Image (cartoon, rainbow, N blue to C red):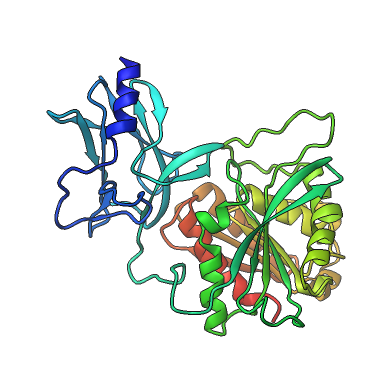
Length: 386
């Protein structure tokens, strides 16, 4: 039975059934696929054809996603097409997969994205009136896959590098650099493929709201030769492997400064990230203030009430010295992600009380999801290198 079900999913699951006239195919669908479909009230309809299956469910990624708490039971039609329509979703980008007779399968009608440590389906639910992360008729930068050899890991690594518009045309211009990290279970593709960071930067730069900058996105996992391999799981804990820190400081920054026309000093270097990547950004940048002057934490695991004199190698022990050195310390979280929002707010307040100036940004209504982090970047990037 399992073989029959999966065969039917692969061959017949592209969602060509007659759609509801008041809904539209998601922009995250493969070309020509009619499902998933998004309604004006942001309900989302899913379909998959699996005539040999006995039970099919829609499983959203995680408990704090924007589709709702799953799994959602799907109903079987006479032709073997299984369907379900979710309640109105939170705008944004949401991972999901189907569970066919107990086996997790991707939706053949969706493009695939690396999340939760595997290739996942996802649905893009548009936010009304928000176009800051969409491609527009403005000059566009390039996203380049840059392979380099890491002495720390004794292995080849891949970074994605956003070069701003006119980078190749203005051959004498040098640029500041933002190192931007993904979350656990994702990789260096996340910020452009899921987060649309390149379009966000294109639009901000075209509007004169952000300085043209290079953005470097690396995979946040690293192991030294002979060490046990790290697993890119779906957890969102504060993982700060020392090997990755060494990769950033000893391999990645020198490589970027040599390969691209950067302004290679701390005043023109920033680091930020989401969730796990935000924890990495805090750990790396705060303990290497000779390298970074701008720091951002998006939905990162934090502890309010921590001893400010000792955390991060004592970076906050001298508020006056810190404030002179660090141009921006930025925290953000969605109001729908309580376990990230409350600690971030508490950290902001504790630092303010301790004499450390910082920025706190909240994303109304969003949870631990890409719409939160798109909004974060849209607020964070204009504050850099001013």
